[in-house]
Length: 208
Image (tube, rainbow, N blue to C red):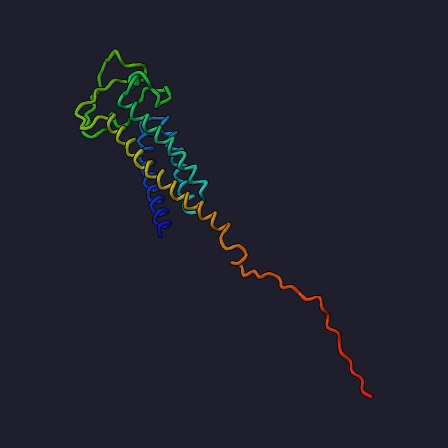
């Protein structure tokens, strides 16, 4: 029962991770955030691998899934630091999320809750094929939305890591017990009986 509950819980967390990753992938596509798009794709593949390993009792797949979650936590921690501009990170100077190929920002910058977008005409700051906008009235600024999204990913990843380690440990213990418990007795093996080397000779009687 404990094994079943652990497997079911891990599958449930993997499904939540999959839904959260797909939702994030959609908004990153809308915002042309190429670095997160690549990371989300790898994460989706790792989560599918974790689900397959849980259902098919493959401990190696769960170990790979747990190892990826460590990298995933680090990546999301970096995203939080980037959007909150911790240390020397700056959104106005660093365009890491787009691989420095464009000036696009997060989709939530213009489409956040309550945001009012106003185009700034004839601005000297506008580059070629770009326009300047003014965003006001947001109930929650986009850096905090991105930070909360990454925090949710970290929360799910931590729980997934714990249950992946637990379930993989159970699988490994079951594999070891299958190899060593029972031996030949489980198959009704019986040692061969020693046969006597004494051969019986027929007895003949003769009557007079």
